[in-house]
Image (cartoon, rainbow, N blue to C red):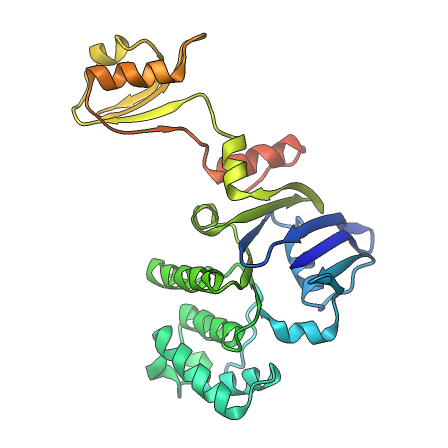
Length: 303
């Protein structure tokens, strides 16, 4: 759907993007990750045509990006931009008219989304009377109500409590199920792991990683296995296992096969002597992969 080729952007002597090349598949939730100042927001602003790259190209469906493509996009910026003294419904009607919706369509869609996001009773409230989380949801409605093909969300979970974060995740998943595309940037790695089909990691304007989420997890699988047993194992029982014990706490075990040992043999041995309720190869959380990759490039990461 979206393809960038050699995108470069500088601000004075600072190089924000250094020849960024990546593809965003249609019908996916695509996570754009990186430390603060890595170039994520710069790329998003170029994609939404707020900024112009110094060099390189961006295409949508193989065609060079142009102003008409903006109507196919919905953009939720990290810096929120609502009119504080304007009533919620009036503001939505105005913003949706800028997206080419008729007054009737805008009224119908804004009513639906206000109800869906739990804000129907605040339609006549001024924005300044709403909490930060409520304001965030109003801006999200303005981003999605015109049903864009590409939904671009920069730190969408900022200011949301767990219940509203879950609601937003459900909407994003529904969007993907309809064949539309979501590009989002966040520091909340657990939501990236839950939601994303693809991820890209950039640092200092360079692309470090760009792959399917499953492929990334497969690449970083370890030789450690996590077991859960029905019974609590004693220290003596654990010590008797033919494996290197990484950790043991109650019913939870983390083991590494001995040199030359087949992992299947280890799993079979544990299962033969104890009642297993779960067993899985350990995959580091995305936060750890993120930190490892960025630090390998010589810059500390803060996920």
